[in-house]
Length: 262
Ligand SMILES: Nc1ncnc2c1ncn2[C@@H]1O[C@H](COP(=O)(O)OP(=O)(O)OP(=O)(O)O)[C@@H](O)[C@H]1O
Ligand SMILES: [Mg+2]
Image 1 (cartoon, helix red, strand yellow):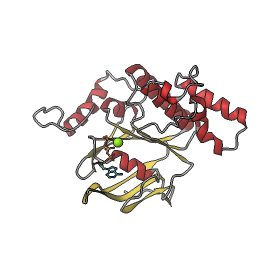
Image 2 (cartoon, protein in one colour):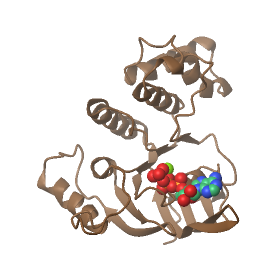
Image 3 (tube, protein in one colour):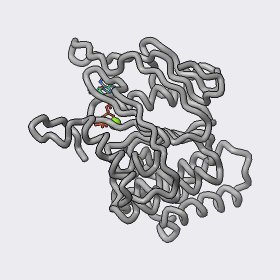
């Protein structure tokens, strides 16, 4: 399992939460390595600990035992090298769309104009260049999500952690932004860890899919997606991977339901 070329190393991470005097083990002994430039999906049913694991990798949450390393250095707090796109968008309601995207750039060595240009560039990429002056409450859920995506991409980070980034989007925007993410990944060698409920999204984007299961959250199977990009969603290879995942969750056997809100 140990690999010195790993950008991210997750070693035997476990985590419990206490709710109403009951302790619930959410993650049990999770270990994996991720190489620079890989796209990894964490796929699994609601409550299996995907967000918790992503938060631990990003340094936003502490594990009870085990460690996460970013190029050999223990992660114990959020790092500028890594941007997190939270499940609830994390937009500031009192800042305009443009100012929300500029937010992360304020700590960088950029002039006011460079900052605005870069924010505008990524807002254009997500199709919101005409909404820069509006406030988050004036946008639809999908638009808010696109602002959050623009804000993360504008930082041009080495590592992007995304928690269901495309979940609130309609199919067209979802497909379009999945392709844009792949373009950015190709051009900037970004490493991406993505939490998703969406089997097609996982197969379309990922080099590897970690299929998780719940109670306690663990990695049930690691699936390498060995087809070249761009991938064709209607190709038999694509269906082959879909079927493996559906079988893994017993979704081809309706007598055995799982809580899987796709
Ligand atoms: N801060 C917290 N305090 C107590 N329990 C928590 C906390 N965060 C998460 N949990 C519990 O941990 C479990 C896993 O939560 P998590 O948010 O990681 O799941 P998830 O796989 O991301 O689910 P979803 O797909 O619905 O977003 C859940 O049972 C949840 O109730
Ligand atoms: Mg979650």
